[in-house]
Image (cartoon, rainbow over the protein chains, first blue to last red):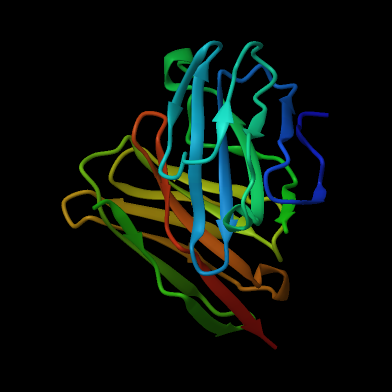
Length: 117
Length: 108
C-alpha cells in the first residue's frame, strides 16, 4: 500500500528535550516536505527536499532541522523544543517536476500531534 | 508578502452546488492545488490546475485564471460527507504556500 508514515503520532514532551519525528514514504517520491498546522493558520511549510541531500527552508523553519540522507526518509528534528512548537505536524511527498511526473499531488502522512510543556 | 485568501466558512445544503474561492498574491507559481481535510486528519488531494481553465474530476471541478489571480473549487451534488476543510495551495518550485482553509458545512 502506497503511504507516508509518520512517528510518533502523539507526543508530549518538555521544553528543551530534543526530539525527532520520523517520516518515511514507499512511493519512490523525489520530493518530501514538512508542515505545521495551527488553528486559523492553515498549513505552513517548514522545510522541503527536492531530492536526496537537497533541502531548503519553507516559511517557518526556525527551531527545526531536517536531513535527507535516503530517498524514502525525511526526519524532522527539534533540537530544543519550546511551547510555541506545540502543533500538528504533517509530512508529505510527491513526484517532483524534474521527474516529469509532477501533477500537483501531495501525499500526506496521518500527522503527529506534538505538545511541548 | 505572498498569500492565498479563502473564505473561512461556507454553508450549503445537501444536493446543492458550492464554490470556494482562492485569491492570491504571489510572485509566480507552477500550479494551484486543492486539498480536503476532515477533522484534523491527513489532507487529501482533490485537483490541480497547471494551466488556466477548468479541470473536472467527478463531482469536483477546479478553475484557475492567472490574469485575475484567482481560482476556485466547485463542488456539485453536495453530500454530508463533503463537510470538511478545503485548502488551496500554490507551488513555487518546491516551496508551497497554503491558504488558511475554508470550512464547509453541509446541512440536510
